[in-house]
Length: 500
Image (cartoon, rainbow, N blue to C red; front, side, top):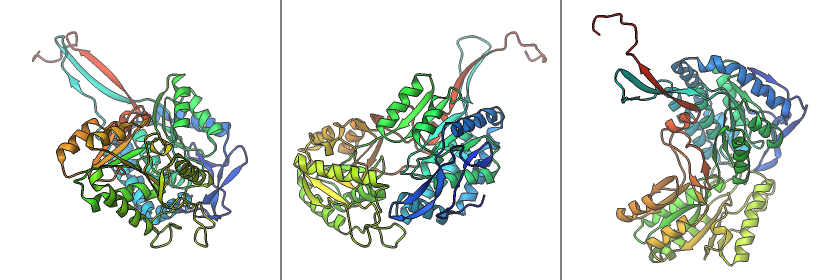
């Protein structure tokens, strides 16, 4: 199958046991451009239980052969997929922009991150390792080794339709697991292109299976099947917790990355320009539709007025529109439901008594009438009792909260149920280190935005944000393995040499 962005009337297929096949349901759903709802980008299977079961059958049958394939050889296949996709950056960036709504430059940035992840995990084939450890007994060699857990399920969200499928698929495959991947129904195109690259790279049939469709029919079937030994999920808290409970009931291994309510703390001695640019990037990049997005600014009194004024002025200059057009800084919400969530949060903030400084409405007019565009928004005077201070919006809505001093800023930053990312802007590294030590999050940034990650660094949160192990880096691959501890007693070994 050629690698291209689907035409409007094109019906795509699932990938099961090395073949592209129609769904047994005989049903397809359109993929809609959120910046222009008149544009259909192909139709994708509305699969059912039978399709998901067939994919699990294929992954189960392929597991023994793939698990016993030498890890460096598995890595070379990932490396070939990387080389294939590296020549398709513009195609992938356009596909991402049109299916999810990011700007073209943001889309290409996500593609490059995915490529970095593929490159990293290709090399992990030479680095899967255990430890040698001393024994209390004589003539004993003790060591640990890692083995793949079995067939796994990968359930990915719509907001990073290339990078997140990569950072789940690549570590699963390098670890020796076979997989069934179910992308979000809103954004199946980039995952399909990723699977096509693995097919072209020579991945054996059944090792990676791709099924699109609703969570109830496809997702639940995958999660409940006892042959699936581990599940990696990224998405909303409500779905993630339900999935975790279902999988735990049968003893499956789970990692779930969910929501965030990420603060940027700005102290009086911060570099104002640096803080403003970092907040704008974190709050409005990807339309705020990132689990690591900046959704709160916690600021001390000496810099509050200047920071607030500067943020409002920068937001007024943001150009909102179709991300394929030059000069656009922010795209649409991914669909009507997410747009409504943004607008509901804005209405509730007004009701709670927060002060609207800029934005606060759905955009209209010729550039916006066919898309799901929310104006980039800032609220001031947000109290900790307000929903906007604690509830995740997942959109371009920023809350400014006043702190009395650095200690109070830390208290406000931690007073949320989530714990993914946080940032502090200050020139005082004593304050910075104290914040790093005591902020209740999994990822910290000093004088940087809350967003961002690197292939070789673990990604993930604590508290209500995540359960299970971190993703990316070595930890991302470790999740798909179990650790064996071995005692090798050689006192009774047959001697073949006089050196003993």
